[in-house]
Length: 373
Ligand code: SF4
Image (cartoon, rainbow, N blue to C red):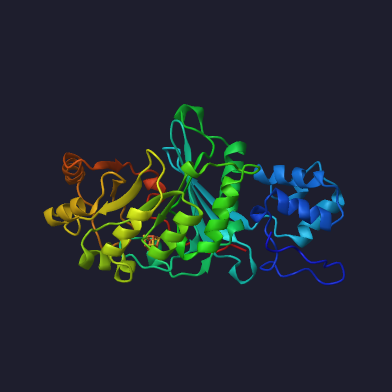
């Protein structure tokens, strides 16, 4: 464990930004803390079980003593997020808006989206408030970068959604899976620009004593930060998705500006090296913009870029947001684009857009709510 609360018995409680967050602790962290607090070791497991159920308010941890509840309340930031709003789409998708509670970041908003399917439930989580990058087709990119999330704040999004689905499951009529089985880092922010917290949160999600979500069920989507992708491959080789959106440098420089720093040739080398397990693929995301990246030359460049042995293309319908400068390709064009790729032996899928009625679809996340009270 990197940090432990100091003995604050004779001093005033630490500022909330300095406090350890309960969701960023694993079982051994809690055991060390109980030892430090002179509590029996089994208390760690009790607290940890509550945490894994998404119960982060010590006052609701009914089987622990009142003095331990007090200690948790004063020494830790147990629940680092406040749920501000939940919106439910008719297709079962739920969008959650959370406010941070930590120090000077208190009140800043992030969003997460639960996307149910018949046999799985995926949560798209945020890693930053706003984004350090500035992709012009992306709604999040129009929001200035304000903060990197801590590992605790990333994990707390999943814990809050698990708790919500337990207390208010999806209607059985929808015939959709009502729990979290898969996690995608595709919400607000560029996850690899917040590397430490993201690596730590992946480890926490995978921890077998904790949420025990396997690496195969975690996907990280990045705009293409080459050194960070290399490190991810070495340390936490989860499923990788790349926001490609063009295979022509001059155009990708505009659509995904990080391309100016790490152009396609560098990205190509890096993807060739990324460790892949059997039957796994890297996903290349390609949002189709009318008359921008859906022309014949765009298709040819994409065909030349893709390594069909290791990669597949996910074509994404552009989800307009208020003031967006682009139009989406027609559905017919999209199908044709996919067919051309398939005819060249490239696995191509068209992503079905979910939650569009609540602005929860891909590229639409932007926290524009102000904290009330
Ligand atoms: S596409 Fe991703 S990296 Fe680009 S601005 Fe949007 S959130 Fe940031």
